[in-house]
Image (cartoon, rainbow, N blue to C red; front, side):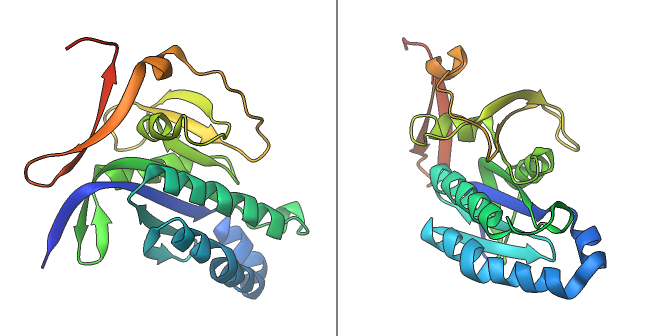
Length: 209
């Protein structure tokens, strides 16, 4: 069995209120969900050079080599779902939460594991319905590349993660505010490859050796 470790952007998506929706009208929800997957979600992931690792009844796990691609994909999906479900009553509307993290992951037998995946799953749980939560390293990576509004949620304590995680959230109704926190102006995230081929993300703050 080939086990591979590398840096990847991990996207975790989950349907809001899945059990309630299924109990209310199982066939209708499954039909709409299949349509969203075939016509929007899967094509958007492919278009942004992502790969679906696995699906669950109410969500999916995808991997991208670029954090920017992962965030563009997530926002495109969320906007598309909102448009496609706009005619539904609030209590019947399909919505997703999405979490994205950039970190070290282990690829094993077609699945991925590791801290990078665990953090992405916790970020998904913090997102508002229809929203996207990203880790600080993802935000630093896309800061000057995507003109999208992300709100600083500060440091969050999440289940089974010992360290606090700084979280940024995008929601469909937020307006673009180009006010960048001072730490974001000073910190620069870059990438390099070690002698054994491992991809590493590193951040620098300030100037000097």
